[in-house]
Image (cartoon, rainbow, N blue to C red; front, side, top):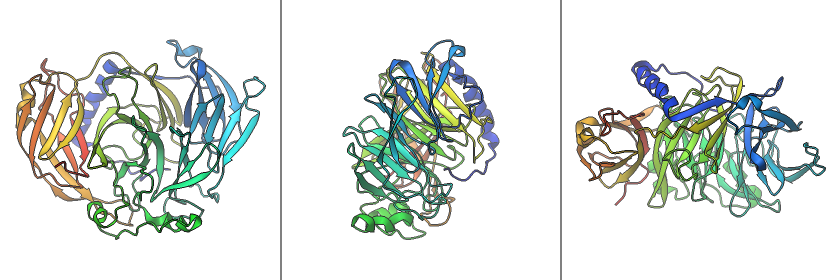
Length: 483
């Protein structure tokens, strides 16, 4: 399911990370939710049900209903098994009295028609793609979009081949069960979800044709970068997807392959996790902090949640990833934010790949304490630099170019597994102009490079009250430079 699992020493950044983690409890309360006795709860998906009940699926094929996960006293949580014998469901949502699951071989609707609390109707909505028993042929499914379609991203066979129909593709499953091939070029998804505008994104992991893991926009008709599954265009008489040049750069290939949509945000390997997973959009109206319309992305290997602020420039998504929440008990796979209450639910599993959390599986709840950290809320591209928006007024240090530093790089676009950071540059921050309210700063920078990840460090910045940034780093993927 995921990327390379080599753990990288943290080195001199260890003290900074430890300090950020120690401060986390001031802003966000992370609590384990008790699990049913004897259950092997390697969670694959989470669905929010009426009456504040939650359905979770396990990678071993069970569906459980949790009651009490919203209560202050979590010791009173109760569980009831709703279904069993399914095939690794990695996508679940509730709609109109039914639970919809994306299993490895199909999209399924489950119903409890007699009201006894267990599913008694299992209806196949669509099973139009292939499987062959390979461990890596995962299928991740979204909730229904505005038209009622379920988006499914299909992992390659063995993470590098396409031995079953439609491997390496994204499909839309319509409400009447039709399967629509939507995007090609997928490698190894870890999760799928929507942003606030309803556009669909998935996380893809480092590997062949993926220099590092990333968040990608599933624009209908697009090519996502990995050509392994392109051969299946013949199954639906589709135009042949593009053939990239091995050993090139994404920014170069985009010039000759108009269907190629670049990663919206690259997560530099080991620096920002190693295996991004579930996606949750914050449309809670501030119930989870000042991150409205941003995305939260799970991280399996590092047992974390990252924060992503997106924007569109010249019709292409791009943006910054920030460190956010850490210390989860296992490797996060599904995330679900209840936008009505502001509770973030995270499910974990370490089966198959280790995680820093240390536990084999977990189910956890995160709530905002109401205290806002001093952070870079957004990082937006300008024609000659970036604008940073802070969560509270900054001190005079934010207007000093010496408070910042930047380096930038890209990756080899190649069929080999992953890529080192290449084509390094050191952009120079020549000016830092604070806004009148001191809640934003305009950085003028010499040396922006289209297609590069721009790594910003703002370790010299403090708030007007003297507080340092909770997280002083950002990684911005500059697909387009504004005119």
